[in-house]
Amino acid sequence: MTKRNSVPVVGGELTLGQEALWLIQNLDPDCVAYNVTAALSLHFPVDVASMESAVRSTVLEHTLLGSVFGCDDAGRVRRHPASAAAAAGLFERYEPDLDEDGLRAFALGLTRRPFGLDREPPVRVALLRPRGGSDILLITAHHIVADNISQLLICQEILSRYAALRAGGEHVPQDAGAVFDRFVRRQRAYLDSPRADRARRHWQRELQGVSEHTALPADLPRPAVYRPQGAEIDLVLPPDLVAALDDAVAARNVTVFAYLLTVFELLVHRFSGQSAFVVGYPVTQRQGVGTRDAIGYFVNTLALRVEIDPEEGFDALLRGTAAGLWRSLMHRDFPFALLSGLVDLPRDPGRPGPVTVLFALNDLDEDDPIAAAMEPGRTVEHAGLRTSEYYLPQQQGQFELALQMTRRARSVQAKLKYNTSLFTERTARQLAQEYLELLRSAVGDTLPPALRELIPRSESGSMDSTRTDTDRAARLARIRDVAAEVFSAEPAAVEAAEDFEKDLDTDSLLAVEFVVELERVFGVPLHVDQIPRLMAGLDSAYETVAESAGW
Image 1 (cartoon, rainbow, N blue to C red):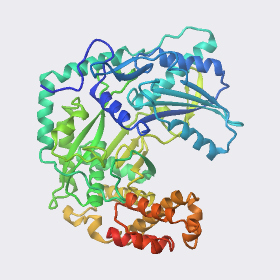
Image 2: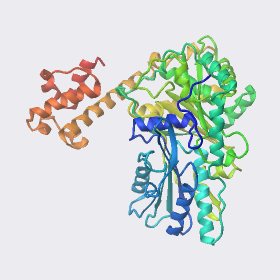
Image 3: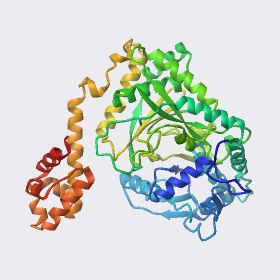
Image 4: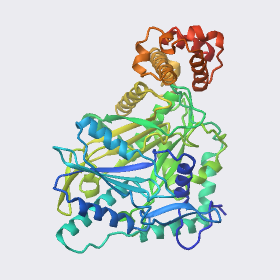
């Protein structure tokens, strides 16, 4: 039978997915990559006391949201009701006097504060009351208690309670946590079932022989320990490309998900030069009565093994992808946390895990009020209260590269998320543009008949010069940042200095510290005899480090 990480007892159990998220946060207490945020512009006059009351009752009366997480005496991860003292910082109020850019940066900073899961509820709400603009409600939760749908459900519950308080009426919560509690029990029972054994055998077959990580060529030196930090690039598919996509999907009798994922596989192939690799993709576990409107962590990540035959074309790869997706969906409940034990990948703390790249697609129904709330620029009404989305980026850096797409009836939007400790913005923009070009070639039937003709970028030379420029610029920036930290100077001052001696002020200890920091950051051996060259300026420092690093 499948082994599990903790023995279930009555009350307080977690799914294995939740346990994995708890462990990640425990190992890296400053991590914010698993913070999920829903932010709303409120187009109505807000009564602050009523809003705070609505927030507190929504969170603290829900068995999952109003919890703290920790180990019991037997070492099992459990959740317990949060105390009144622990919930003291649940609701915050700010009146920032900032311009639009400053306000957005301030809001983003509030959502990027780590959670202490063992000492505070995994939800934090802030009401921003800027001068001369709409109030903004920021609802940030740790992923351990909320998936994407849950973010919107929490918003709706807070607004419903607020409206009831203002009207002096009763409010019956739509969900108090019982549905998720039942889901946890089913997940625990599943782990001891024959279905879980069949799923384990399936994933062993699917991932057999995977012995190399998806190796994306990083712009920057790979940290010894993976850093979950990131940024994103917006990508909008032109209307003519969306129409061509619909025609191509219909002609091949596949899903939009399978088609867009297959194009992403081509992008990874060109970027990495690999013909065999693994791509992750999230799936919902909202199955059964009541789960659609329940708050909780109802998501699992699956792994697709990609094998690109250089003698075959796009359609063959698409058929293989579609077949692999159907096979794996039969075993979608097998916890992602257990997959690492089924592959032969070496453990590498410098990578996020067995899956380093991810593809996700939200296919939204515009008539669904939940979907409507997610549409940028659209104002929706709930409980008689008008709101619109106040977009803030989130969940960046979980993977080295992730393409998150959203499809509505007449549009497709995407965000290419990338890890900023590995890749520069310029590389990310090039990848985003390359995905568009590959998609247009696929739907236009202009891809080569054999994928061996789709030369990996590392071999084509078509982008070599820009990549070299990108590498140099990124490394120069890192050297400048190291210098600024050692010299206690602004990075711009280091950039403008004619030589580093002015910043060092003849302090030999700073010179040695600069060498030590360069060795640590770039993982290269340097010698004190090289100090005079290192001090001659940014370009000279780059050349000195480049010689030692063999760039």
